[in-house]
Length: 235
Image (cartoon, rainbow, N blue to C red; front, side, top):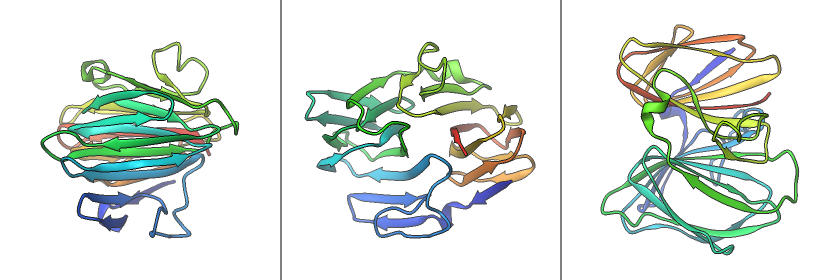
């Protein structure tokens, strides 16, 4: 099954400083049919105005991955971590027993991010934060694992998370094809950060979501130059 969720069908909240779309129920947006996808609980498409951001607030028992699409995000937390993550790169935060953090756009223009929350396999883990640069050339026509907790993900250079899941990205030229194999019991959620594609023949527009389950092989073809982000989880 491949369920296409068009961008204009997503939950929407606009606070002036933050213009957000929600792929799954979040905040004031509640859709019982979109409560998550396997262990994937949140996928927010956030646009953050210059000089603004999320003031310090707490989390616990959640794996939070931020993929920066444009601009940069600056992180600070009560563990003493501070870092700036630029477009195309990723930061992770394992909230575990509890962490207080802020996320600000200190850039001159709008910062655009995907914020992804995955339910951890174990509650009460030690909190952790990390960020890493991932050159886009390494993901041309293949999925590069940016953050993951599956066997072998950390050894391959991915940022570690406490979940049997992976956040991946790829870039495709117009007309280029990429095949994804999903093992039994696995599900995926795919979103174009740039461009558009077809997924097993179904059209997937810019920032649409494709919820995938029960498909052994998925064929992705770029309609134009595309950048795609995918989360693979236990179904």
